[in-house]
Length: 354
Length: 273
Ligand SMILES: Nc1ncnc2c1ncn2[C@@H]1O[C@H](COP(=O)(O)OP(=O)(O)O)[C@@H](O)[C@H]1O
Ligand SMILES: [Mg+2]
Image (cartoon, rainbow over the protein chains, first blue to last red):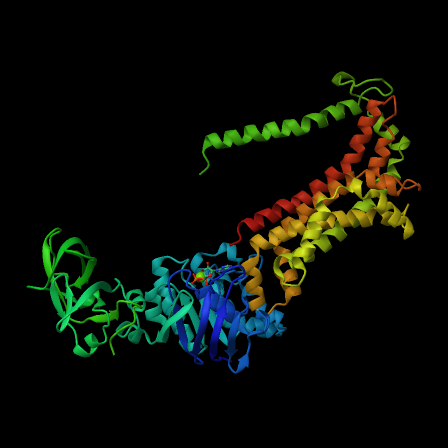
């Protein structure tokens, strides 16, 4: 039976470490939801999953699966299935034995194991490989066996730790779609961990962004993109990253390299120190007749879009995503203007919008 | 792709190693086939034709019962020590329980302590329990020494190569015992076989312990029988050589037998991922 997952003020500190790897994380994943936990390497994503699976003890807080408090329950009794980054398939067992291992341990009758393994194998196109050992499979096939091992169990929740990171780019896109379809079909709660914001945006019902062991924002993909709570989330979600520049507040807007960018008065009123962090997504930066002047340093043509990387007279490199018909020469000066802006506090990075 | 030069270098090094280890063995073989009763070491290959030396030595040294005794003792030690080392190594490597590091430290101490420093108290203990001059007086201490090393050896394997598999098994609902027997033991086959070979060689060749423990009985092990050919003043080197060969042949046979499954185990492990 699929169940909700609740983290209630959970902290995890590894032995011998001063800073906790997870800091008072509170989060509810409703029954049947696919939540993607995303963040840079080392932010505590695996720690989150390991705490949920019972592989790591927590130093504070409670973990619930359904209504059951599992904080002190050992891993083997938590009834969750995990797909590891390196798959961790049992090398001496065949694919069928790998997938049936949990059922065998749970003393499920042989016939039923066979039926359930067969059904999962059909779902994942693994039928021809059931008698092979993992060593004789390709990376993609191993990944599917790891998925199969999780599915067969019909657990209360699926935990996925960067399950696609060992696949090549094309297979990754295919498998990503398969995982989403599968999860919707089975309707089982899933916590999916990745450092790849594209995976987060495409897969998740909701996305949780983690930084230094702390949850920054939990929201739908559209909401974290449209209304990031701080500059970290804003720059982490979206590709290429949001342009960020420190700016001075002037009358009716902010000044970026001498050009005034209009900003709502209510928003400006929240700026305290006279300085703020201006954010502009590359897709919101248009090439215009007159505006902010940038010197073109690099032009990337991707076919459907073109990215222009240009430097301000003083300050950072800006990226603009423009129509492929625009092809400025390297070293030339073009003018850009944002059609939409974000504003963050200069100190603390908090969003000043809404 | 391995460069041709590396292949040649490999062969040269292997041949050199083979020469270094086989040379003395060949010497002993020539010695063993030499004329008996002659004083001094005679490595004359032309005279190495006295195959009767082996039969003589077998008879004189009472090697039949000695090899039987050695075989009983060593087999029990090997089997018991491997069976104890695997779960203990697993517990020390992967289970959390109070006193774990203290127990591990104690085991290391067991590896470091030389037998010579313990042999007298050991002997007295055995006598107190009426185990002296009996198989157990050799088997029990040998198991103790072997397990100390065996736990250390298996722990190293479990710590470095099995972490994520163990975690996968736990999440699959397996308890510690199921994880050990169904996931780890099949995986650790090469390590266990290597351990068995090491235990066999060490304990077969052990001399001091059986000498002390069995001195008051008719029991003697193969190395004890061998030493009877080393005279106090005069040594018959042909007989000594023949007795040496007889003593090591069981070790060679065990090694060859175990080695076959052993290389198979290594190959099976190499395609794991
Ligand atoms: N076993 C461990 N002992 C000590 N520190 C650890 C251990 N595992 C992870 N860490 C630390 O905890 C932090 C979070 O790690 P992790 O959860 O693996 O990050 P992620 O999966 O997001 O890359 C990192 O700083 C990492 O170095
Ligand atoms: Mg990780």
